[in-house]
Length: 234
Image 1 (cartoon, rainbow, N blue to C red):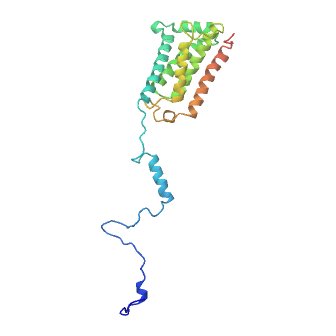
Image 2: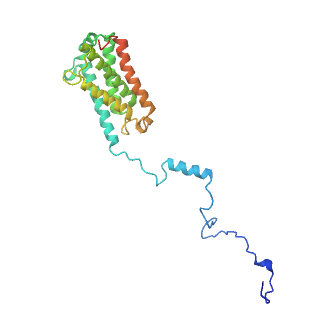
Image 3: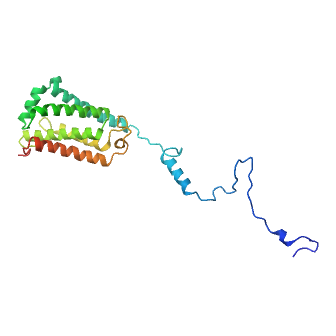
């Protein structure tokens, strides 16, 4: 109840609704609770896109340490080795047998079309080595090297009348280690220090690497089956 001396109207005691005003010093609309309104779908999409693109300063930086350097050494080491062996076959450098000797060894191993294989085998070995050193088309280059090495192991086992010896000097551990290196390069990719550095198989190798691995293994076996045809275990 109002006091006896109150002469006002009861309706004037109602609390008026709050209407925010614009303060020139704050610049723009003023909201007393800036986080009270839910974020719209468009704003959430924009925030996620900014985070995914790396513009967010709080996004963790992709740190690979010495991983790319190690992949470069692995890739270049195998590539230089393939190039050196290819040059020995073509020109007879560093005590190599040259074209004539390489052709005779291919023919003695039972391969058909030895005259053509002399150039394709040596040239393909050099080409695969160059691509590995440059880091260009790395999965395919490593798959080609893998096919060549698998074929070499099959030829060695056939030459030993089906006997597979692992340890040197008469075993195949050298070729097996090269096969392991080639398989590793196919699966892990070239790293960022190469011409493939911006490609998907350098950043996140996956399905294409498995396809290249199957291609390399099948290619090595197919070369033996169609160009030699003999059972290496017999």
